Image 1 (cartoon, rainbow, N blue to C red):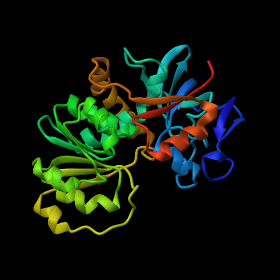
Image 2: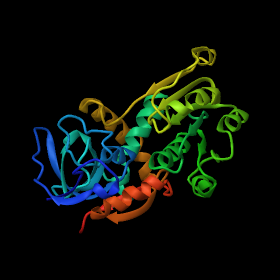
Image 3: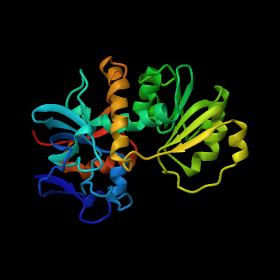
Image 4: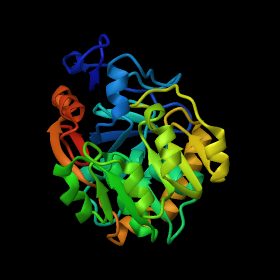
Amino acid sequence: MRAITIPMPGGPEVLTWAEVPDPVPRPGEVMVEVVASAVNRADLLQRQGNYAPPAGASPYPGLECAGLRDGEPVCALLPGGGYAERVAVDETHLLPVPAGVALAEAAALPEVACTVWSNVVREARLKSGETLLVHGGSSGIGTFAIQLGKALGARVITTARKVKHEALLALGADHVIDYSTEDFVTVTQSLGGADVILDIMGASYLDRNVAALADNGRIAVIGTQGGRRTEIDFGKLMAKRASVSATTLRARPAAEKTEIIAGVRATVWPLIEAGHIRPVIDRRLPMAQAAEAHRLVETNEHIGKVLLLNPS
């Protein structure tokens, strides 16, 4: 088969569409003929040599895909290997393609759905009537979190550059903050504070996130684009009776991923099939043009997901 390989760490240009051995399914795994995969920021980190796949995972990038398993349309959460023509998948990490969603577009769902649901619902316990602050609202994670928050009855605040505000309001965001000209803490506090914050920045935003919280608020950190190390004033955290959780999805044990996928199928898939949530696709590119897809994602000019499609 062919797959996108990473012969050496580097820029997008190192990504190579090459002939590689077919994957060999292990016990409990099935083979999926990949129709499409989607680009995640973790793929960029892997390409740069900063995020190695878990032990035993495919060396090729790609944390989600959609395709055919014995002719049946499916999508899947992966530890790697989605940028390829075929991938071996833990059978319990498969999801049906939601009714009303095209097969290729379903490739944009597993990673974001599992990440957002496991952090916003499972960890941070967002409830109807609460306020959710989503950092980076125009990303794949952000566009999904906005929609899920609204579908669950929350008020949603998000951050993005001004040029993207109209698109995020159309997705259901109640307030969009231009992080380049506005202080998200001041704006969020003026709206009563955030009960839950979904954060992609890590260190650089931690103190400000605590300030933006309402009493009994919860911060879910899923990225470290703003650094990994900082100090925290526990007095401020304790005064608000607040909590901070920090997780990654890729490194979780397979059994825990299975539980998350079951929760997503039971609670999120019906919302997609009812039309409350849709995959947001910025553009589609051939799998062989993965380098161009990575360049696009690095510019942060996109809204939603960039898909990589195999030749039909």
